[in-house]
Image 1 (cartoon, rainbow, N blue to C red):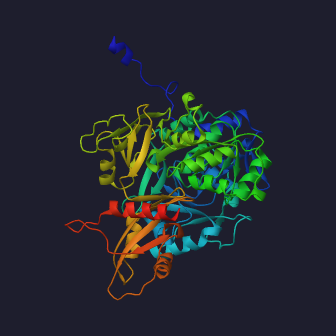
Image 2: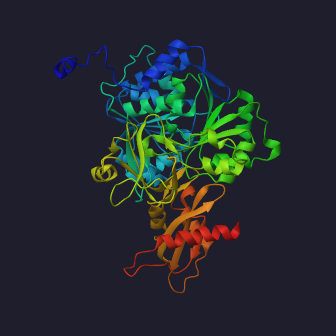
Image 3: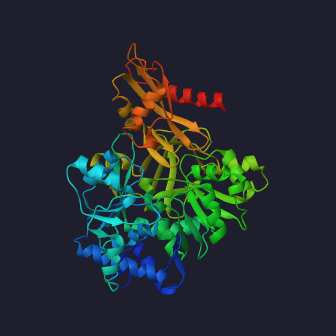
Length: 544
């Protein structure tokens, strides 16, 4: 009877809060001498990583870092950033990894809005940290990561990362969160407004994402993973935790190039890597002399703007096995995959590549992925034609937006997370994105707010009106394209306006093409962006 079942309460013996922190403790105990991290000439075993993390967490606690504190990090994909994915939450604090390509103004906003208590920064990025402090009119304690393989930079703090490890306690208590709903990470994402929103991850979601990824990607034990995905993107798609779970070997790469990727695959026997479609294009376009033949297939997980079918086909011809995935910062990264089907085996290479460019079906840990009518909330027919909005429900959906109740409520209205992406659903249930409902441009895996770019353009004294849309690009997937109305008599050139943007925003955000024209508008004066998107597509077709 019901009361007998309910009489069995949760106890410490049968209920432990889920947290990815447990993966490192387990792997270090079972495979202590297995190589965990590789970076240039550095080799660290899982035993060594486990000890370094405990030492670092101990030192952070001695600095006053504890539960609920935000620790902001600007670092490249080096062992330090990997270790911080464990050391910061081990203190109960929240890890805030910041995009190293951002300009000082946005970094300053993140420091302030995210309530950062401490900044850990690679000295290569000291310039943007100093500029952000100046904009905020205050500085924060800084721990310097001094990487001999990095370009120069100034020391900003009184402590170094290496120093914290040296003086830390190797016996620091290893304890997970008291509550699996506890915040683990804070990631800022571009949206429809110029200011990024802070996406809050919890321990439960990160644990389940790391558990679901090996099943979906069919990861074997001890993969050799090349970390080409920036760890500041959705915590590196949560692969820092997933690869620990599988006792893999993580090969760190500071700057990604085609030659470097081929060299590392050959040197270390890389089995898996991830990246935006720009990584696929980079591999395909690597000069023949810089390539190394693959001794075995290498599996690539790719996400971002849907990769062109031609790029997928060319990548496959090189010996890479590509799986297209889809997700958002708000869903811890990928939660939908283009799962390969046996009935596709006999199709042509071009047909297979086209199907591989679909977003697909939910990952194992994703409860529901659907495409619904935005007005009624009802699922659209699975006819491959009727468009709706992708909605997602599951444990790998964010807690919400940090200090933004209105945006959180809007995102979760209807009982699921609204992606803002327009898609169709095919008869086999596979989802395919057809357009973007929100004005975000995905360029090389980076989210760019069109509103933010428009705001900068409008700062120029000769600009009357500006609208920014995505311009399809064979290398980056999409790049910003600006349509601009100028004041009468202005002689402003495209190059001059691009230079103006360069001085006011990160390089990857500035328009790559500017068209001076009268903008199409509705009777009420609203800019008709759908017309501009079509114009951008036409420009691409005419130049291809």
